[in-house]
Picture 1 (cartoon, rainbow, N blue to C red):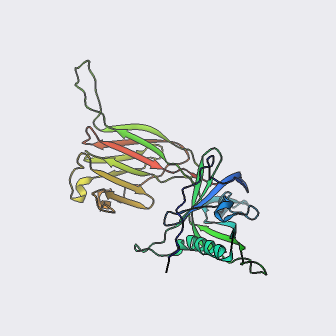
Picture 2: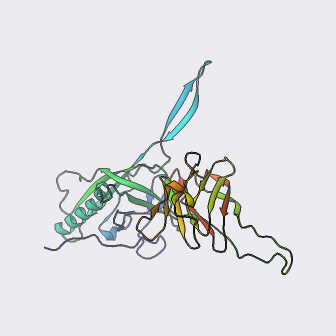
Picture 3: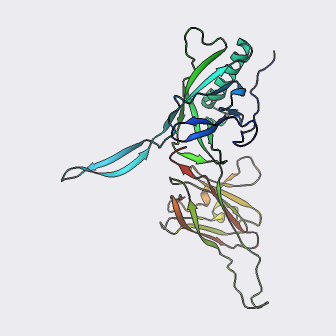
Amino acid sequence: MPIITAPVVAPPDPGGPGGGTPIPLPDIGEALAYYTDPTGTVWPLSSPSAGWFTLPDGVSGLGAAAYTLTTDPQPRGGGRLRHAQPQPRTIVWPLYIYGHNSHLEFVDRWRRLATAFTRTLRVGPDGRRTPGTLTIARPDGSARTVRVFYKEGFEGQGKKGSGLVSDVVALALWCEDPYWQDAQPVTVHREQSEGRDFLAPYPSVSSSQVLGDTVVTNPGDAVVWPEWRITGPANLITFTHEDTGEEFILDPSATGHGDLAAGEQVTVRTDPAQIRLQDGSPDGENWTSALNWPEGVLWGLAPGPNRVRFELGGSGPGSAVDLSFYPRYETA
């Protein structure tokens, strides 16, 4: 029997053909919205021609995250805030689903959409569940995303006349990270230049250790946890956050590998912590032993400017550091 599969749809261009019509959403005005399921299939949520569209009345959960506050009572009355913990958010997203020509067309769309959202709850071969991504795109081309898991709501109205050629669902989408992310990463690249003759054409000095004291600006509202990619040659790698004094050191020899050779790369993810030598295997070789535990701190970047320092011992032409992160925001 034939298998019904979801159509592969390119992400809508807010200003281009087929991008749909901006819809008014609470807190953010007119915007386009689309959902990317765990398989990478994109489902436009703002285009009636798709056979479903968002009902703006009832959309909620796009504002600032909720916080749990830990406080201490004060001897003279009142209290003092000790800690603020952001909580997971739930987004409510109502959809109107219909068939242009028949009941079967409506049922086909209904089933495919239900699968696209509930697929986030399936456990994959790696033992983990993969979230979907909800994207809000503005008319200027900027976009923010949030990772979502289906919670409930794909039920229909359950009243007379519904479910024949149309119905309405009110999806509840649970977000383990309440912050929205920019759709485009911020990147920083530092690379060792070719060495120069000290006397030709005039006296000059180039560092073989320090790739840069630099200021990295986080334009978002919350701390971000960057990803680093280090390209050899290098024999000792030190990253320091000069504002906080936190640093971590990678020693390739601690893994039994020896120095990082020219062209070899190590990727460091700070949340969750993961260090991998990119050796061509799907996940890379585990290099956690290269980190100076327990003193090393895989530090994050606070909102605003951050003074950081990259040092690569044994560096040479081609040695490089690439830093990337997605700014995080309170609202869509």
